[in-house]
Length: 160
Image 1 (cartoon, rainbow, N blue to C red):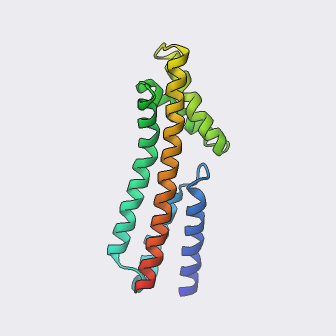
Image 2 (image 1 turned 45 degrees about the vertical axis):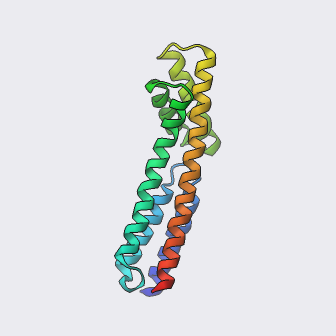
């Protein structure tokens, strides 16, 4: 049972790390799920306090993911339409690839600003650029959180 639990934990951690950059794979959620499952299957190897700290980084990764695009779009001069378009474009791009995810975010913001908010081309492109940069900032934050979560798990297990 112990070997099976460790194998499951490692597989979920690796999938989670890969999922931080792959579309449609909930990376940090898989990592947090691996930690909770590991605690339930092998309670002596990690404390609930460590699980809670790792959970806080999981929540932070979710906030950074959403906030990155929204703040980036807003800093680029985009409106609520631009933010909604960026989110919709990202959702469509997620089904294709990582580059399509980034491109979908930018194009979604540009199209929404142009069609719904009736902004000129320069303003729409600036909003799209902001959305793209915000997406990349959110991605960097998500990857950082995933690495911290995994490192905290390893440190907590080694400390016991």
